Length: 217
Image (cartoon, rainbow, N blue to C red; front, side, top):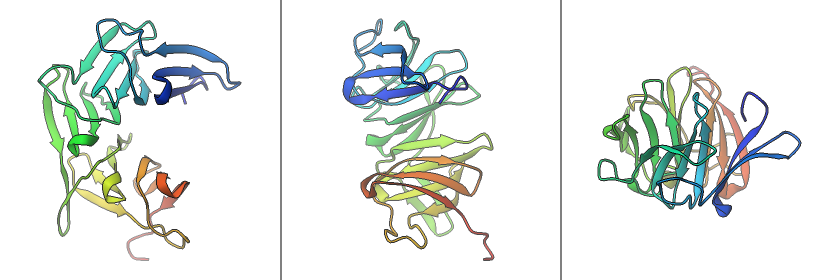
């Protein structure tokens, strides 16, 4: 949801991006064949509005992350050359230093790409107290305003709360006091502070809101 109250929708099955008013009116539409100088949008899974008013689209089937505007003029195209090879990416976030953090699902990593489209860092595993926790099919990643990183590690049925550098703070794989205690193929999460998270637990057909208990409780 944007500050205006409108909602951006990555309408994957229809290969399009929509902006919809609170009353359901379509205000803007970017269809699969409208991009100039780029492959058609095939399977958009994530959409964000940048401060410039441009759209940041993650096209999973196209193996691309695209910065464009509503007219289809492409300003940035990641994954179309040999600098960074993406495979089934599912989310992308523009960071304050100009890099793009991409959840590169098919390559089992989180990759950070600079303005020259070079990979400047990647996380294939998170460092925990007992060793390294390797990512498997991560579907979503997000850095909060407080600089905490949440990773939806879908293939491992867990949510990881980390530092931006990849050090584990907490792991969520079970929901306390629930008749369905384990997460099953979670696909999205949103931090509400360091120790509070909302999760789309996909195969369990539910939304889960969990707050971590104090360490001494």
